[in-house]
Length: 238
Image (cartoon, rainbow, N blue to C red; front, side):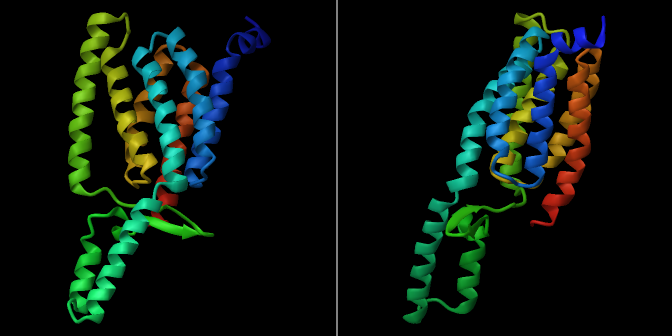
């Protein structure tokens, strides 16, 4: 097979790999255009993974489509309600302070323990808009996400091993389950999502290599390198 024949038969996978690299670059830069690029990449890889019998990964791309629209909204407007709630609450504290009801120490305690995410400083005003800031993962959310990952993993492994001809049901389930959690954390701009991507990209590179998806292997190796770059870049935003 000549190079031109290989390119013509794998052009859609190559296109998806290119848009995927652009997606991660935009993710590192915290550029909101990562979401429409991600939508395009997911649509392409639904086809790629279906033809390669990676059914869990194919379903994951459908999830990416949905979460990309949500992430697009959250990054652009998702902090507005929380900021307004925090603002109303701050006005109440200020009014109580004027009336002598709350001291400076109590105000600080209320701000730090606010049930609204805006009270923890995860929103930022940018030219009149309120957008999400990078935040750290707290133990409550981390515990919930760990439980969700375990449930998804076991459920997918059971389905793929019993109902499909997936060649690697255990690894396909692992990649998909961890990616679901990582993408949700990305949509909420949680810093630790980069650690999950490092694990996903490492395993995916090996698995896709065994299936002969060479452009996708290159894509995930680039993902892996850029995940370390994203980890460092987002840390400066904390």
